[in-house]
Image (tube, rainbow over all chains, first blue to last red; front, side):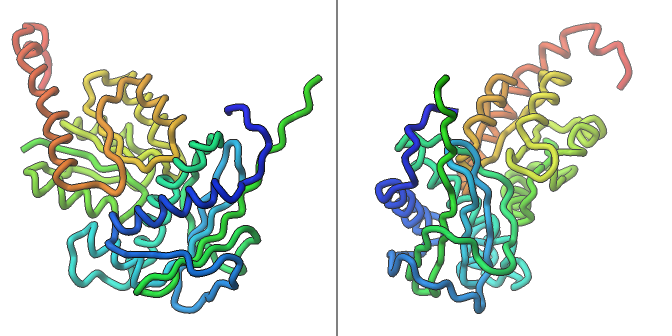
Length: 157
Length: 139
């Protein structure tokens, strides 16, 4: 693990993270997203929540809340299937979370946080606390909760 | 028709890879959703190519690649992964993996990588054919 100065997940790191996410949404599923709100309550209706654990200099989950049409768009594109089975939406959501989180970690690495991601899992129940970001898209909002905390550096002896 | 095993925990990714590979005239002989049974599957099918995801439940793709290439140095391994796994990618590089695909996978690029990996393998085959020891044994 790289030496980290103990800084929190700051605004610049979050901005970089979001910038990559929005670029990746466009290139992966052709969806234009813009940051609509920070700190808003997440709506759980007609959505699929996926959590991915981050380890390394930052620890904690990144939780995504996708509208079903967004998740199905990934399935549609990856499988070149114009009418994908609605039951595949959860698989699409977990893969999209995996792709977006993996790509966006670049922004954290650029700011000195070396991190790795775990296996995406469907999240059920209340969302964890953290930095909540709502991105508006034509298919409904995508919500993102960044709950990673800086790993404390042990004091020098 | 070259044979391939697909290993990825995402059914969507397996579906995409299956589609891309069969479209490129590969025969998918087995699929797995985790790394636990990969060595046994490889031993059973001895495919021309194997695609491995890195982050999977159970055994991860990096440790599978490491053991697979230690046992079968000529195995043609293509890692298919998202970023965020740099430490695992290092393990793969040290193990001798030469081919990588970044998710989301671009079908056209993927086919060129699979074919390059395959060419490397077939280019090595005449060496084995010329070796009398390799033609006198079983199978």
